Image 1: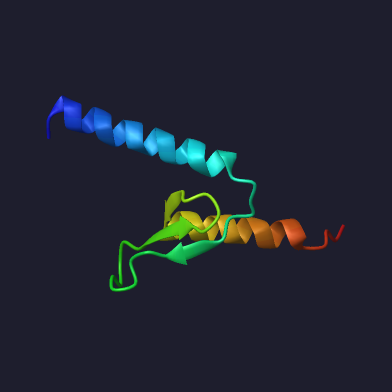
Image 2: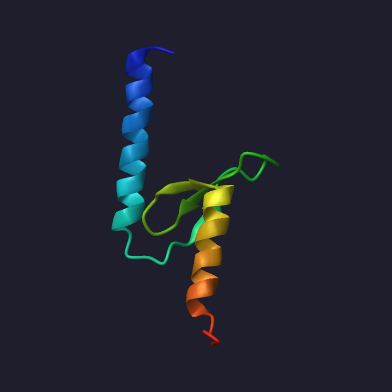
Length: 72
């Protein structure tokens, strides 16, 4: 892989992060790799940002924790 290719991938990743951060949210992720059993990708219906399956799982876990009642 050339340095230019690495730089392009890095720039795409940064742009994707900015897209996700700018989303009015909450994100509504849909599977964009339905035929793949592993290495799945999900896309937000609202902003178009993409995440991996583990990123989606942690995001949804955070939403659930945010809705949970705090018991002291």
